[in-house]
Image (cartoon, rainbow, N blue to C red; front, side, top):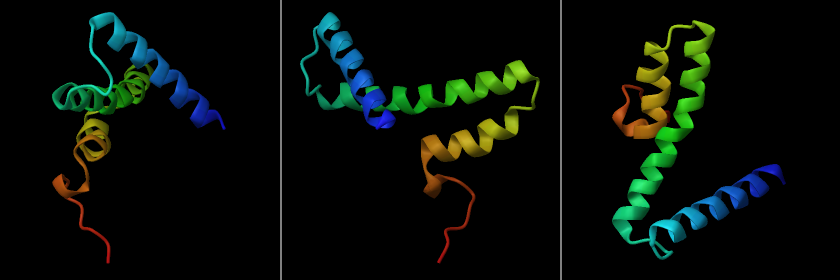
Length: 82
């Protein structure tokens, strides 16, 4: 139930932001795509910040895990399973 509550809260926050900048929802396609890109990139900020503050090497994490998450498996060097 917690993921649904968090998702609803995030949706409400985005709705308030859209109202403040004068964008109607559903947003025009380019605004929606930029919003989705921001969400994907924003998801990666917390783990990167945690690694930076912990003094853990972050370059490999960004190149492998973050890139795979943001860009998808097709753009990574991994082989797809059967």
